[in-house]
Image (cartoon, rainbow, N blue to C red; front, top):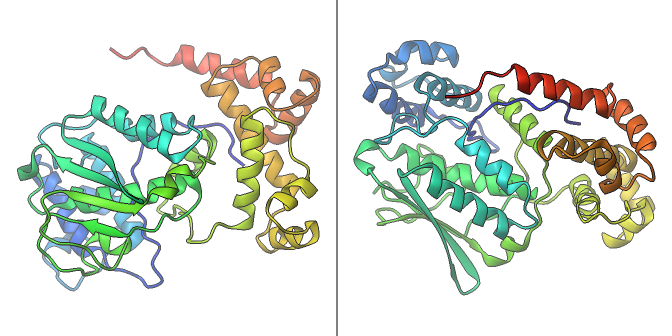
Length: 362
């Protein structure tokens, strides 16, 4: 269950591979931007827990957690979401802004529309376009200054990151039918996009992900609180990404989340089981096997949505209680205190104090 959100920004690649991939090649390409901006890579490598002789020792290996920490350290040192590999930096927080816009959408199609519009306003260093081709859609990535990224690290990172991000928003690992890349290399684990699909079309004029159009109708099932928790997992080097088959607990979350977002009555367990074409007994067993239960899932979703409404939408306690299906604000206040340890009014008061204490940005 998410508690008080934190304002952190990160873009996290974390391929879920059955083996232990080596990211040495990707790490070296990433550091090209650090050197291009005149920074010493050594402190950044040490912060990521990587020996400083990485660039000279071909036998060294870089594991997944180290790679994630390296990206985080480089982004922080450079103050650049694009890791020094573009003509102009992209301010930290751009990704989080796009995700926060997406979280207010009902479907992946609407979320992608919002994120692509925001990306167009936030940076001139890339162009993202989405086009339909029969039963498929193609998400294209075009760099404005490819000469700043001569080893094409940003392309491989963007391809992997966007596939994982869209999957996270929907709770389902979206399968990719085709990958187009600008580099001429044949598929190998040395490139990040290998962990999307073990094949790709090399030497293409435009980088792209192609997936089935039907996935655009998937609902957005995440909340702001879950995004902040996901970022914290990324900063620790342990982000959790969706698997190929949606877990039963996430299917339950999706149904309850949709009902609450549409201000319908909160679904009862038997109704959820019926919607999932199973029996209550079987669903209860599936949830128990995944280490959770229906009451816990429903409370988690209500808590996350309550924080969304109180914190990000700045609704009143009464409005939040009504939208979450509570018969009266008093019942909501008791539940919120049980979830978070503080009353909703105290939570909002703390937010007001925190905002007033934050210096205005010039």
